[in-house]
Amino acid sequence: MLADLMARNRRWSDDRNAREPGYFRRLASQQRPEFFWIGCSDSRVPANVVAGLDPGEVFVHRNVANVVHSTDMNLLSALEFAVDALHIREIILCGHYGCGGVRAATEDLPHGLADHWLEPIRRLARAYTIDLSQIGTIEGRRDKLAELNVIEGVRRVAETPILQRAWQRGDDISIHGLVYGLKDGLLRDLDCTITKDHARFGGVT
Image 1 (tube, rainbow, N blue to C red):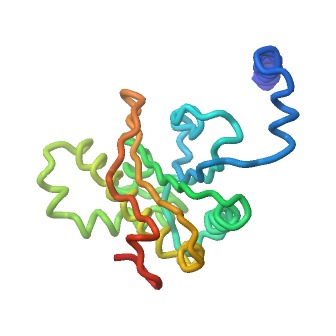
Image 2 (cartoon, rainbow, N blue to C red):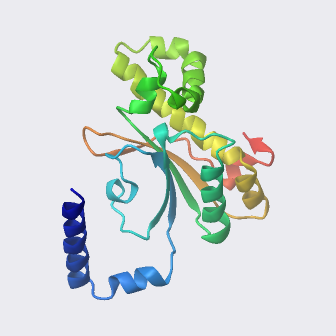
């Protein structure tokens, strides 16, 4: 399988160079992405592919169920680098329907360390018990919970000291919440964007 992967890489590299001579030299010389993408680790949701972007156009952090933990040093380090070093002004938090992490968070089964990681999603499920109970199917409830997880993640990113400092110094940064449909390949805007104009320092409105 590794040999096949290496052969595919070679074909991809040769094809890219044939279509755009010097592409990799240009890409290697600088990193200037327009977007910072916080997404799920699910192999079916590669950021640049679903967004129709080329390598180099999106800086990516992924984890199980795209959860934003306030103590996740990996995410926070990537966020700080995106904002302060790469000067990215568009942050996208993207979940997806049919998310295995969301499903695991709603199951009464042991999942090892994942149970600790997914605790914020279970907390959301408890907070929105009444709303979720009005959705007729378990799949529908889980998809709604995936949306709520994105909306909560957007709020949590906005509340980080990284974004608060950036907005205080006048950086025009927007945080958007999207959800991706595995069944149709479409991104949906959850209309929960937070910008400098909508934020208050020390928290968000």
